Length: 371
Image (tube, rainbow, N blue to C red; front, side, top):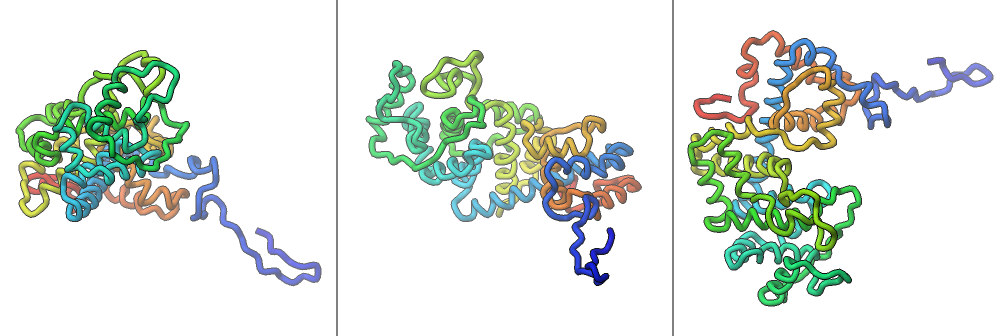
């Protein structure tokens, strides 16, 4: 860069703005994908197995962090309430996480369980009412559906004094099938199906039972219920029926909840005062075999940066979590890839025959120290 000088030849103090190779601040719009993904052109394409191992390791590390946070919450409010809150937050996705968390705190788990055991659909009525999504009187000109009439009657007879939170549900970007009414109905169904023993005990029984990871995943999915009832065919109280029925919580969202809530919660409980290596092995087996959740913005960004279209890396939930962790720890803060420790670390792994043992202590452990 030419020096800045005055007309009489004196040098002027100048700030030289760095170019894309040395820029460490926020990425320039539209320029990020061209400057990221050095590891894609090197390690991933030359030795994809090394990168897959690293993704798995990063995913395990992320799961340990999740179980640490939920264990801290359990120590303050108890296992059931902590799991209940985390479940509700996972139902709310990015747009409505705060709203769902406030609902879970306004209607604590012990009371939610009582309502679930009292009569069918009463928990759904309570959740919808607290959310401000169940009007006491039908506000539309069309005829109310039978399910609304049943819910309104239950509200008047059993929960007439239930308060309503001041929540905003405005979000034009969400798909109709993801509306909060359907998500709350799906959550109510799950908590009703686990109300007999309580949330943590019901799931502990499922973790203890010997079965394959596929059988365990299917058994947990069954707790969410199938595409039946009013919300299987409707996205809101009024409007036409859906062309095809679908469960209020679809399989993709169920995998998100299993991976982000039920697995770290089970891990937190089994690593409490009375550790149970056998249960932890069952939890870990499901974690490493859990199918991937629906792609989110960070998944897509990372896969673009790392040229996954050219480098065939088999993805599952654990490796998706690894992508999230790598993005959080490095890529979000260093989009130029300059001085990235991930690249140096991956290169070092290339010459290690047993790569998982070379990074001991940084992942979930099954029985007998097996990663």
